[in-house]
Image (cartoon, rainbow, N blue to C red; front, top):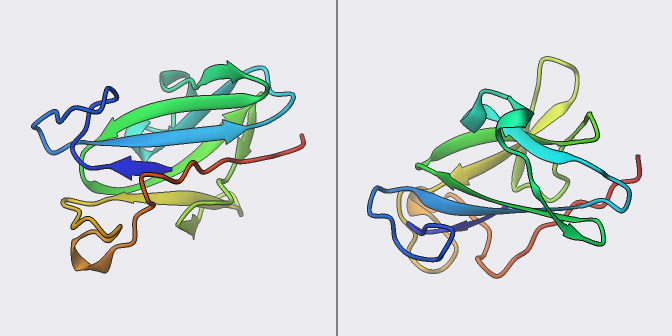
Length: 130
């Protein structure tokens, strides 16, 4: 996931402290992909990703500052993001991916308090064979 400070999906500031979070997933055979996490009460149907062709899926989330756990759901399979900045154990014996949306960024990819965030130039992807 890539975070952009206080921007709407069109790149403009929305003025309410929310951040655009770019999500990209790659899977050569997936027919349906969604992202589920603490930001949508773990409901994959609430956040389907957009098929871009050739196995690429995209979604732009707009989230307030905070720490969020998430998983991708590809054709019913729940998958952690291997390129996530962090993971945390889940109650099902696996791990959830974690993204932290900072309150502010100081321009060097670090949020206040030293929380690492992905560069806006990164395009994290997942390549899974189901």
